[in-house]
Image (cartoon, rainbow, N blue to C red; front, side, top):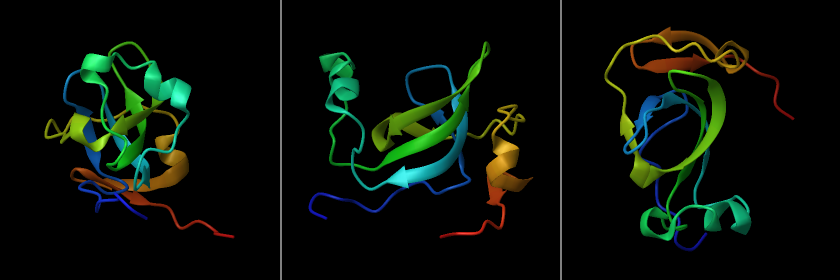
Length: 110
């Protein structure tokens, strides 16, 4: 895959957004951008990240709500708050939290 870089963050890691007030746990990683062109173009051009970097799927939350986010690597930082996460889907994918990492559930894979 041309342009793909090794991911800096891993599945189960708790991260926060560099610019916006939300944090979450990574549940999937794309080696390069893998969303719609419409989604990418909706990001203001002055802060639009490049496509040739890992993108992360997060069970994300802010003070008001929980949601799924798709975030470029350049916009993530490790979360060092040790605050609990409340996203309801975390328990579907992860069995337990060990420090700043969630441990994946054993899942049947096809």
